[in-house]
Amino acid sequence: MNCRKHTRTEKYFIQTFGCQMNVHDSEVMSGLLEQSGYERASAPEEADLILLNTCCVRENAENRLYGHLGNLKPIKDQRPETIIGVCGCMAQQAEQQERIRDKFPYIDLVFGTHNLHRLPELIQEIKQTGVGRLFEVWAEGERAEDLPARRDNPYQAWVNIIYGCNNFCTYCIVPYVRGREKSRRPEKILAEVERLAKEGVKEVTLLGQNVNSYGLDFPPAKSMDFPDLLAKINKIDGISRIRFQTSHPKDLSDKLIQEMAEGEKICEHIHLPVQAGSDKILTAMNRKYTREHYLNLIRKLRAAIPEIIITTDLIVGFPGEEEADFMDTLSLVQEVGYDGAFTFAYSPRAGTKAASLPGQVEEEVKMERLHRLIEVTNSLAKASNLRQVGKVEKILVEGASEKRPEIYSGRTRGNKLVLFDPTTHSRIKRAEDLIGKEITVYIKEGLTYTLKGRIVE
Ligand code: SF4
Image (cartoon, rainbow, N blue to C red; front, top):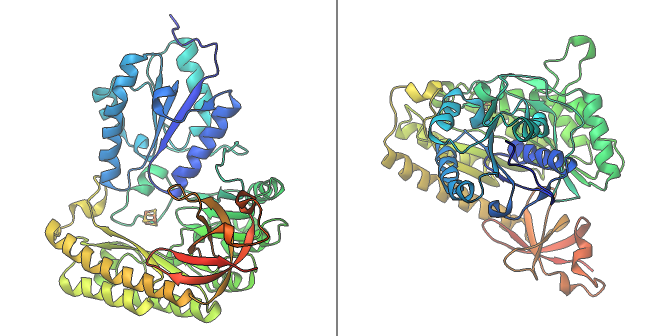
């Protein structure tokens, strides 16, 4: 018997964990659901369909997911017709599928990253055929093209250019769950960016686990690499800012640095994860570059683009890391003088090589190193922000702050967040008219994580 018939408009709620790739996947799932007649719900309690888009990169993301799944049980008890689904990276792992199957019998649907375009059909299947629980996870597959996306911000958009990863860093689960690198066809990417520009998007961020290896999987006859793609996107009318993430240092070519310097729409910011400053640890991580190679890239980037903002990811406490290795990380961080950094204490992921390496570092030591590292990265971030004081910058206005709606924010081309009071400009009648516009601000104050600015009349 089908007990899932509704006469009112059905609502969906998606909770997203993890990186920008997941955030964008959730935008696509929202687009697919809205195309099928669903409306967005503001809370899981009012939704007919609840999806958890999961991440498995860090262990705490996994623990958080299972906590959330537990919290959804009362909703299912109260309204058994609610469909609850799990998707994303964790859903790609057989052991997690088993765990959900055994321990969470009220989860109706599990699907993966390769078949998210099948979401409307999967829901229909559950509703119409009364199949009960449906687990459909593809180990690999061609990502469907031309899927709709529901973006919260009409002026900024994420565009996938490459899926998967070939690098097998020893601490990372991504290649096992997202599969091997597969570049999207350039004509599809360019058509998408042109369409976004026509819809009013000003800034695109090109996404991939490693955007720098874009096109390496194309047959040579049709070859196009990442700098070529950037050059083409740079010519698209209406787009004024191009960003990209993430860049693997081993694939950051001179050609790319040159294109970044020459393409006037390519923002002066690079996120270049170094992870560690010791060659011994970089080798154990299988990062395939040395400290010196990385520092040389930084020198080239700064020579080509003097105002470039450089941010990174860092891991402390990787197996085998001794105090001297950690000091190498600290000295590299100082030498580069990063403008910002995401810092992590290593946590072993089941299924990765590093999880079984000897020399696992004690938790207490990891935390102590992490605190020392954060002290250094915070003071560098503050110094970087103080260097911006007195500059006049263009920012793309994002909107009002949630906590203080009288304060607006926008980002510089270097990706620095600038807070400003829109009412201080005599010619601005409605602050919300600024959203999505590029305006000029004078930077008057530099804090650790943000800048404060004043609109230039
Ligand atoms: S480059 Fe390394 S860290 Fe990044 S996704 Fe690939 S394996 Fe993971």
